[in-house]
Length: 139
Figure 1 (spheres, rainbow, N blue to C red):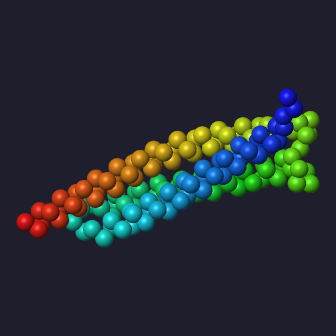
Figure 2: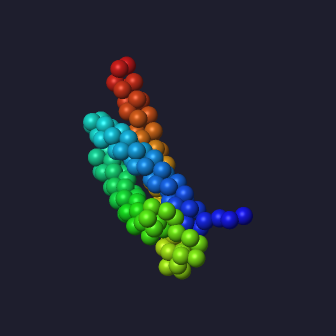
Figure 3: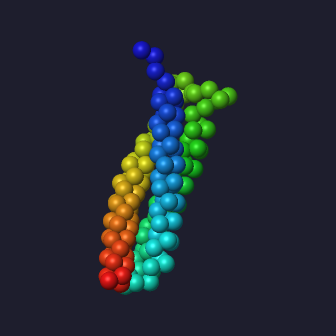
């Protein structure tokens, strides 16, 4: 079987880019939710808690943008006249850069998942707390 290392790397990078786009959309939506709940003035220390989560999301967003940039730089090195390099043309440096991108992506995704679930738990508990306060004030 004849396989192309460059094509494999490019496909892997495309998957990462798709994942990053999905994560960035999630971050934007979650930021909207967090900003929306700041309107609740009945939850103690809410603004500080929201700010903490917004900061975590911002760090993830910046890290993903850096990763996208690194992917684009390496992708250009994997192409010659818009065609993937031959296996013999793939240097040890390119292999190492792809490995580094892969390790970075793994780390970014793990950190992002922790942030995501932390934000989701915060949003769920805050919305529940607000619901209970509204229910108590109606009675």
